[in-house]
Length: 117
Image 1 (cartoon, rainbow, N blue to C red):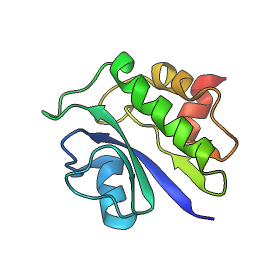
Image 2 (cartoon, rainbow, N blue to C red):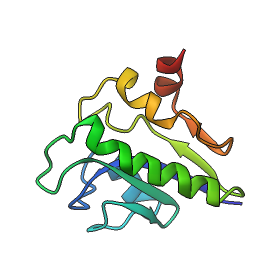
Image 3 (tube, helix red, strand yellow):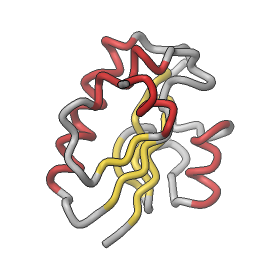
Image 4 (cartoon, rainbow, N blue to C red):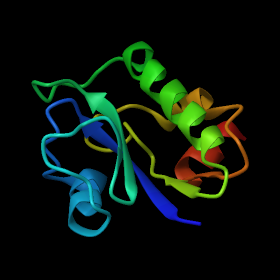
C-alpha cells in the first residue's frame, strides 16, 4: 500500500513552486512530466504548457482520469492537495465538485472538503 501525493501541475512539467515543488522535492514528481503518476505522486494539470491557468472545464478531464486511476489502484491512498486553488487561482467551490464520486482511497484536502459542505 502506497501513499500518493496528488498535486496541481502544468502541462510543461515545471514543478517550481507550491505543491508541485513539494511533489518534485519529496514525492518523486518528474521534471518535464505534467500529467499522471510519477514516483509516489500524481500530477493533475491546472495550468497549460505556457503556465497559464486552465479553465475548470479544461481541468475536469484530467480529474476524471485521476479518479479512474485511483479506483483502479484501491490499495493505494491518494492525498489530494487543493489543486488549482493556489497559484492557479481557482475557488475550492469550483474544483471540489470535480472529485465527487471518487473512491474511498481518495482523501481530499480540508479546503476541498469544506467546499463540499
